[in-house]
Every structure is written in structure tokens, then in C-alpha cells.
Image 1 (tube, rainbow, N blue to C red):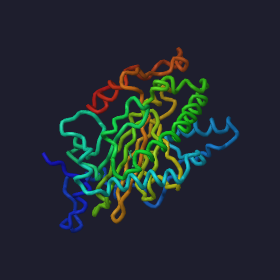
Image 2 (cartoon, rainbow, N blue to C red):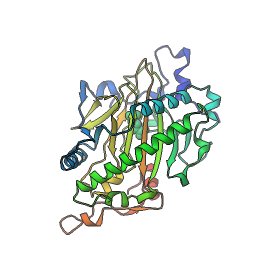
Image 3 (cartoon, protein in one colour):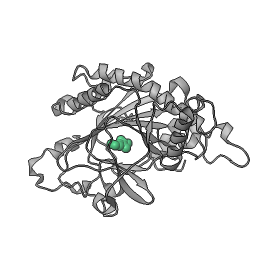
Image 4 (cartoon, helix red, strand yellow):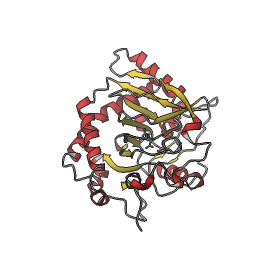
Length: 335
Ligand SMILES: O=C(O)CCC(=O)C(=O)O
């Protein structure tokens, strides 16, 4: 069975300003009718180099309670490394189709890793205008290099260096999130599997779309991860649902975008909120993004942290294995 990649569809010269009907969203989802026009949402921007630890804890905690999303600057990941990450990712997607297909998800394969296009359709059989590549990057024991591009040759080294420079940033963020709830630094990370926390990289490739007002890239969702640390390119696309409306999130060069995911909402017993978001696409330009999902190991049980639970704060979420959480969410079953 042939899988149609969005990148291939986008390159067809016979589109003539149209797109196949499965990419045209219902009116109540179309960006043209549902986006607050002309306003880029200034989600909190947090300077991670702030020496005033208490104020840093307060800003991360406020942003995670009120927004579920924030951007961090001065995070110590060198901007040259971020540019290199973007360059090698873009070069992979620019390879001839048959070279990309070498690391495609095999048909019928249940795992998430590999190059692909979302196969299951969404509400009313709709599809997102996006292809992707998923592969695990850390810890070393869970890496399957089969799913890492061999081309460009510097892909592996760049992604390994990026991951290693991200780990201290992730630890710092999880520590700040812990402190924001009055916990010890390591408690959030421990509640997610400690040093076994899985790092899963995704690259989204959103080719230019002849009808950006009618299509979406990624459909509205919250992340199943604990936190997601995302690098975008400069093309506008990320939107956040706030006060019942969709807003563009302002792009800040070299900032990392942090999403609070479902597992942090659960650990915090609902004090921190996972962010509902989606992406739009551009008529002329290719948008790309590099979210890193920090996930508990599949067998690890996640639930509200016992220190946050008492008679006045009973648990709002079940404690369950991460793999069972994922199964219920993907199959739209109650948690
Ligand atoms: O491209 C983005 O900015 C967001 C991507 C996203 O939400 C996802 O891949 O789950």
C-alpha cells in the first residue's frame, strides 16, 4: 500500500490553488474563522539565567498554572547548535522521497518511531498538512538508530549534542516545577521515572499549503508527555487556546517553547495545566518544528504526587502505567 506524504502532495503542480478535500477542515475548525486575527499572544518569557531563584520558581509556576506554556531564553543551549539541529533536520526532509522512505514506519507497525504521515484520520476523516519523523534520543538503552537519518552524515552527532545540552535544561525546569509546588527539586523527575525518563524527538515538516486558511497542520491536542521542549523555525504556526479563542504564539528567535503536558498536570494533581494547542500552515513557506517529548518509561506508574494529596486535596487523577495512559488517549477511552 502506498502512503501519500503531504510533502509529495504539496509538490504536485496540478493543485492550482486547491487541496484534497480531506485536508479542508470543517468550518468550526478552519483557522480563518477561528483565529483571533492580528494578535500574537505574548506567552510568558522566562529568563533561565535569572540568579534570583525564588523569582524564577514563581515565574515558572505561575506560567504553568495559568498558561501551560512559556518560552525560555538564556537556556545555555548554544544558538549555533540549534541552527545545526534545524539544518540537518531540513536536509533530511529535502532528500529524495525514496531516501526518506528507508526509515519510514513499516505499514502495520504499532510503534511511533520512524518517518511518516499520520495514518489515522481525525474528526470527520480530516488530515493534517504535515509529515514527521520520530525517534528516541535518550537514555542510550532505548535508542534505535535504524530510525535516525544516515543522511546528512552529521545528523547523528548534531542530535546527540543537542540532546546532551538539553538534559540539564530539562532537569532545571523539572526542579523549578517541583519547587513551585513546595516539593524538593528532584520530586517531579522521580515521579516520572527519574533517570529512566525517555526523551523522544519529533520533527514536524509542514510544506507550503495552497489553502492555509482552510487547513491545519497538527490538530488541537494536549501533549501526553510530562513537558515538551520545542524549537520552531521562524515561520508562524503554533497556536494556543486561551479564554475560548485560538491565538498565534509570538516567535522569539532562539527561545525554547515549553509545553506543560498531561503527566505534569497529573503529578501536580491539576495545579499545573497541560496546554491545548494546534498548528496552522503557510502559503509560501515551509514551517518546521522540533518538539522533544519527555515521557515516563511505558511501564512506569504516574499519579498525583502523594505529598500534594490530603483530605482537602483528594486525587483528581488515577495512578496508572504511562503505556495505559497512552492507549486510552489514542483510543479516546476514559482515563
Ligand atoms: O509545530 C509545533 O509548533 C507544535 C507541534 C505539536 O504540537 C506536535 O507535534 O504535537
